[in-house]
Length: 441
Ligand code: DLL
Image (tube, rainbow, N blue to C red; front, side):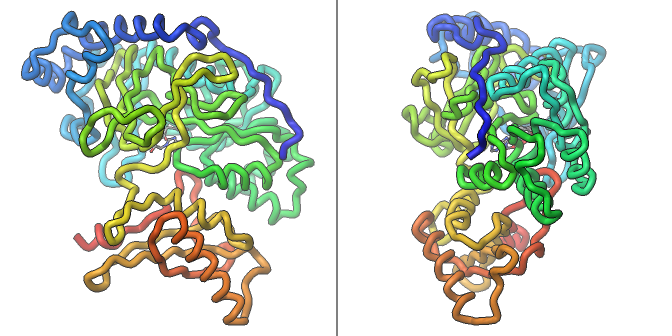
């Protein structure tokens, strides 16, 4: 456990603690204005005409369900800027989503959008302990990816000092951690783990670094991974969530109570739907997050299907904020793989692996279909000193891992133990699954 305590502070108290009725009224007003704005976008104009929707027919939040959904595919079909809702001259910034397959999806920001974005990031950073006297090392990529610039602007807004280390060059990151003595680290959780590993490899004592806490996001991670990061870097680890199509980081983040990520509901209207039926799921049940941007100017989106599976909690948080909280992302609908009829998320495999002592939290899931049946191989790194020449020791490891995976997912996998430091390390988002079945298609 880290010896530090995080103070519960608010950035914008009226907005963050608004009674829910008032918040819902504000959401309706903003939704109507948003509908009027997006009517300039051909995709929405046509959809509204088809569905007979005009802004003044939206009077309650239930009316939201009548609005069309927007998918990543819709954005792709209007590549690059078909969703722009303002004249090009009003755009002051472009970013793009990672685009693992083919072209990225571009997003645009007006000056107002940029202010909103900085504020949204400042809010969750303050909620998670950031103060003006802190020094923050940002190890996210600065570029089209929204992580680097988004968090940079948020930290700047709070008024803390920034070490813009950017992604990669782990040796230099270590130097900065020692010599610039940052209190706060910002990056992906998998890169935080890589840094922790490097700290230990170099024989540094994490307790002698100035680091106190970190804000991690941009990819799915588990509670077990949080514990590992907290232990190995001697910090408190906070989770924050966002996506380029909505704004980037700043959609939600954890407060000092760490009981879910507070959604910034005065700007983002969030539904949790069954991805198959598109009906709302009961509170607390897993569903796909579908988000409407209430105040974005350059590229507002209506009911954007995030493909992220999470649960929502509307109960009051001890921190005093009235906003709903989302759970950590359980998985993405497109990362979920179905093996012999069972739905499995990489996060379940991660949770199982972290239960087995002696394994490192570096893994790769490979799925193939050599014959009629799917086969899953989980490659797992052992910690240094755990590799053994004795077959029996290694078999015991494999059995233990297989048992843990089976108890969480219900599927049996092949376990391939690999030597320390042999699986690829990632500077940004980690790649956890290679589906050879898709590659064969
Ligand atoms: O990853 C924005 C971001 C940057 C968020 C830095 C937080 C910190 P994209 O590249 O568009 O944007 O990827 C968005 O990443 O739909 C989720 O699947 C995943 N993701 C983001 N944050 C989390 C998180 C940025 N905390 C996609 N937990 C999203 C799980 C996350 N998944």
